[in-house]
Length: 341
Image (cartoon, rainbow, N blue to C red; front, side):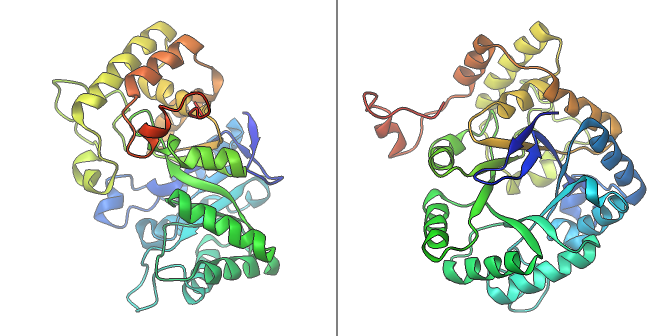
């Protein structure tokens, strides 16, 4: 397993990390992802540790806190071998303030996550979403206090726009507070908008990337192809409205090339798709999930090979889309402005 620095920090994380969104399954939405209980979760954690994975990612809102509880049970006795990443911002509770990135909510959310996970500190703590009501200074001051108190080691954000992340970094620098060392972002062969602004920002400001849904919300599993019905057991029918939109024809165009390269390499479609993401700029770790041992072992193979430059170029061409303004205009100024990839 390769280990990479997490942004502008001294923390090394495994190139592949494990996402525990499949743990628990206490709501209809998350049951579509998986319903892994404590004993099976413990086995999956062991397999990850044996393969060299040291980062396990979860969020308080996954299965209304049950995913954190299951992960906490699964890592019991193994805490010194791994890093735990969790998040808060989304609503968890019925109270008027049980949502957002306010000081009130963050302080309560951190204590609740520590209790559910049965640990005394969180290694990487994310703001899960932009809260446009709470002053950024309030959020960052609170997170900095938690770092100083030892409850959090590093802070990160997720699903931020470029300007919001840049403003947050500037405020942290102004006051000497802990800064976001990473952004957890959606990035896949069928969702490359990350390259337009967030990736260049990450390169410029040394912000690492933890990639979520690298298989395009389950579309690049190798089971979805042109002219075929969505297979039974797919989470797409129940969750598509909450995930990234992907036009069917664009998906099929990418899958056609994935199929070609899978045949050339003897690898599976998801292994090829994951490997492509793994070697993109700013990527510190790619979060993989699994409903069972077999899925996990198949995904772990992703770290064992590298695509050729020619194969990467074919995937780039198949997955390219015209950027929105101002990015399409900026790309015309090739003399002094080039994309990060």
